[in-house]
Amino acid sequence: MKLYSYFRSSAAYRVRIALNLKGLAYETVPVHLVKEGGHNRRPEFRAVNPQMRVPALVVPTGDVLIQSLAIIEYLEETHPEPPLLPKDPIARAKVRGLADIIACDIHPLNNTSPLRYLKREMHQEQSAIDAWYHHWVIEGFEALEALVTPGPYAWGSAVTLADVFLVPQVNNARRLKVPLDKFPKIVAIEAACLALPAFDRARPENQPDAE
Ligand SMILES: N[C@@H](CCC(=O)N[C@@H](CS)C(=O)NCC(=O)O)C(=O)O
Image 1: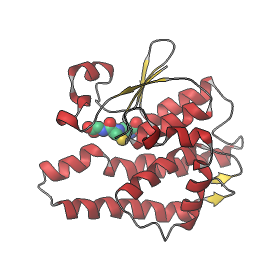
Image 2 (image 1 turned 180 degrees about the vertical axis):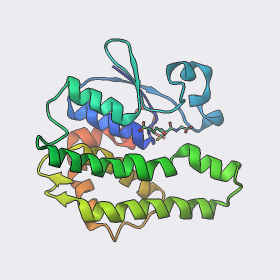
Image 3 (image 1 turned 30 degrees about the vertical axis):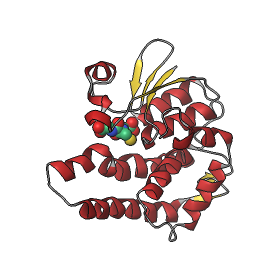
Image 4 (image 1 turned 135 degrees about the vertical axis):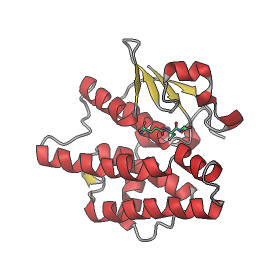
């Protein structure tokens, strides 16, 4: 498989973790999201993913899959072991709910395109953009801190989709200097996950395009 990725992209980081957890080999194709206005905007990448975002995964059929959640669900369906969702339907919905806080409510407000739009089109100062970023992360993390049940992972003793989404978002929050002292459970879950080789190998600094 071929993963179009950028070392700092938290959405690509999710897919890297899932591929590693499932023990699946893949080749990284780096797409620089910043240099020269973003290599993701070049026609050759637009032909891969018309949305011009990473991740995109080329699977063995030759199909290109986009959107980290859809990609990870494909991996779960084609390679069910180890499972990323519990068996019980209620627990599955709760784990999906944790992942969705990040995928649907935190990340879309804070990712590259909206932040760039605030700066260029809305002419906001960097301090206002940072305040916006911090606000949405803190609001989402407050909910997550109340909902997770570390044991030591976000949903008990097995790694789930919730951890796959949480660890990259925490990495992002650290990079943008969001104070994490109010979130001891989240920080403990991150530490437990990063002790696993599948998470460690997926870290931004361990990618071939890391700067
Ligand atoms: N919802 C998408 C988000 C993908 C996304 O926004 N990726 C960012 C990097 S984290 C990106 O490629 N941004 C480039 C841009 O917006 O120009 C997913 O989960 O895959």
